Length: 228
Image 1 (cartoon, one colour):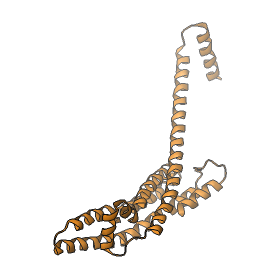
Image 2 (cartoon, one colour):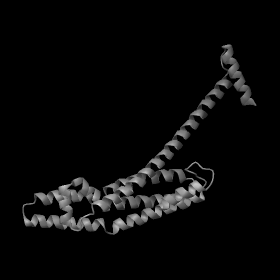
Image 3 (tube, helix red, strand yellow):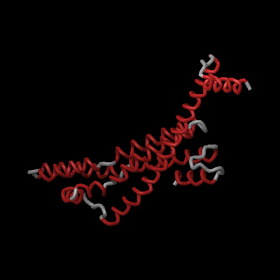
Image 4 (cartoon, helix red, strand yellow):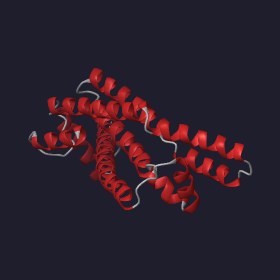
């Protein structure tokens, strides 16, 4: 009631051209501050949802594209084959060595960070564990991918003038290929899958609905996509 009376006083003062009382000015300032906070929160929520949707769409597009590259131009079986591919078409060599999946992992990291911001209040402990696993998975995958190192080695192999130089370059390339299909690659995928399973479980048990629905179905669908 007091707020209503103060508001009426404020409007009356404006119409009459008089000065506002300190109480009316305080009400006006509080209303303005509250409106600004509400607008800021709405903008942040909108940006978060847009980032999640955009990244999810890009992730779903990049994976089929990478599979298409593998089907149309299968990766070579030998290091010399890799070097020849990079010399013939550097972009195709990078694509065959999971260039699109590198971009995909970066986008997934952004999406997971947005998920952690949205779910941090639902279960801080489990989301902290999930974020730690996701960071470890992201680092392991990027460290295991030797696409640009193989491009540089292919250039060294092409300009090598002695058999010893070519042998050293081939040995380095063999080590890079072994690293690409080694433990870091597999561990990174497992840690990433575990992180998303934790996030999906937290989302299912929480009241956070990133899809804007009023039932559990949108959360269930989004959680299933994360777990997959």
